[in-house]
Image (tube, rainbow over all chains, first blue to last red):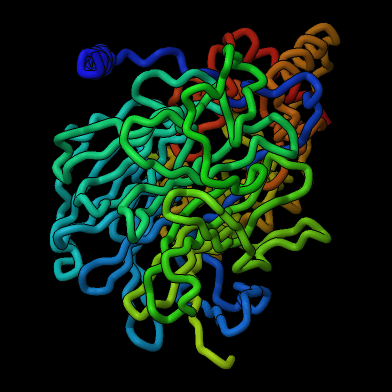
Length: 401
Length: 178
């Protein structure tokens, strides 16, 4: 019985792909905003596309727990967000609107930045494996072989192998190779709230050449950050909650994929069991895998890093650092920080505590930076990217500071 | 031909004078289908210049004009134009019935929630009030029909399914706002 169901699911899934004529895209902006909020002036926050000089990056405004120090590690990468570490220490950084991928080289006393490729449609996804840089834009997958030693290598265009669907919204990528050497790629729901068609609202994994595509999780609204638990190897991923259901939520999520094929609720069931206001269903949370923990209302939760280094105190080993870019769909701002999240490997007993704050001033509601992604370096320091200022910070620890 | 004129002009003139040759001496355009840029939000101007320079927003007229501009020069240009007073592109009288229809369409599409209720714009969202009517029509059609590249996906989604007639009515209404 189980096998028949599985085969049926595979067949229906396969045919949905084969005949994929895109349906009329839902009008994103009109969606899901109730009459009561008709006069709201909340709108997505503006990113900055020009370079920010080093002197205008107010790193001294940042707060961390005792013993931790933060410095500007690199700057001059407008829109820089996800980071991937090359075999020889170069760091590749993706962006959205500005369409570039940067390469950052550590020269010892300073970092230099060059543009690897530009004019792509939101090349937010960057990953590195087997000496090659993988870049995924909304509508393209490029592989740059041996790029660290051969900076002008022409990319191999692998787009056709990855079966990318046509709609753009929430389909700028975060991509990463897992412990199983497969490439994990989320496909966000192309709306604020809707019933996504078969190719959206999910996370897939592929072999590096695009073969062996599997959908491993569904009911995911928009995930742009994940990592694997160092002990269990399970995928833990963040997911953005929907807009226009008020200041309190539904909150962003941290989820755990204990096995493939789980359903995480979108669009019917949000957060820890909040039924959707527009897409109603009897018993909406039945069969839904609920989050490990909630990550705050409209927080724009982004990168996840399980810390495995030796530089930070032992209590941080196997805990997560998670970046929250910060809210737009909330009358009082929330997020704009990096938090430390602890939980047992089974996803229970979660605790979220502030780690890096100071990007946003709650008193006057101003913000200057938006932390997006984290990267653990070989020496155990952690890099944090700031998509707003196009800078990368280095967080280090020394006892007795 | 026009592109070549622009390329030579870059070396002969101050950049603001180059902009003025199309967008008007005070940033208020007198030329059909060329937008007014006076009084536009600073970040909006910066972003559009970046998008043109990077080739992400395609324009045969704009790309030669901004080729080679540094980020600092772009910031300077944006600072200049945001402080110029915007003057409405048309002094024609407004038909009240048309204006009422325009208000209703704008309300339905929530234009004012981003562009603000008086459509003066802010941050990365442009001033629509008093913009050239022909440019407003052209832009909205381009967004609706996915011909406007670069930038956020939100404008295409907002105008999805909006009729030509409604777009013209919106443009009529917005162009006549002070």
